[in-house]
Length: 230
Image 1 (tube, rainbow, N blue to C red):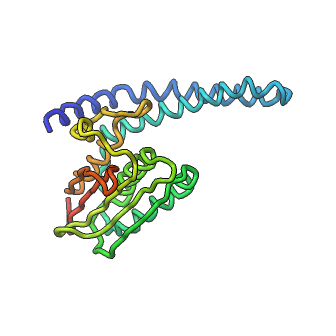
Image 2 (cartoon, rainbow, N blue to C red):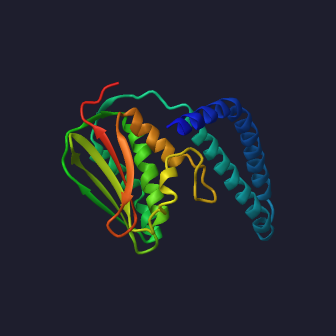
Image 3 (cartoon, rainbow, N blue to C red):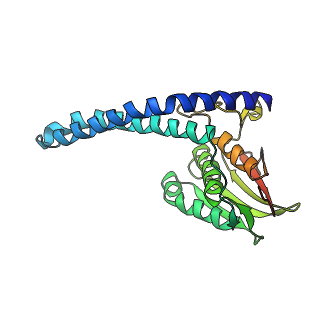
């Protein structure tokens, strides 16, 4: 916990000091590339492709950098909870619907097992963002022909939501570091996805943990107590 707190303080200071300075040149570069692309579109069609293709790649990288900066800000400055009565199953269903096309394209089956439970006091937007991160990670870890399963139910006086995949699972060496800021096994990852999920769950006085799934994949379980109030 001391290590996580230290890293949180570091990312907070860095995000506050650098986000504005980073975003300005990124926005300026993106604008100039957009203007350049418009001019290139006036050229004969045969000449456009070899020139516009590199521009599109640069634009993609700029968007990726913007996304990383946004992750830093969201993690370093958690928003105040806007508590309402939340149907956790409805939040889960919305996330699965959002990923339906991506899952179909990847050849991954989305499954759901929702049990009727009482509503929880929570921030629907932040909970949806947390679940989105879990499902995205599961989809990225699941090979074609596999599945991602979402469960919602009640256990020990708390609502639980689990996301399980049929991927290769997570190495025992990696597991202790899953919720540490900046730790990632992805080449292009920021290492802030799971820490952000952890932060949202903690704000809701809940818990989150990872366990091995039924077929060896990863299973992340988040629990939110009923009747939680800040």
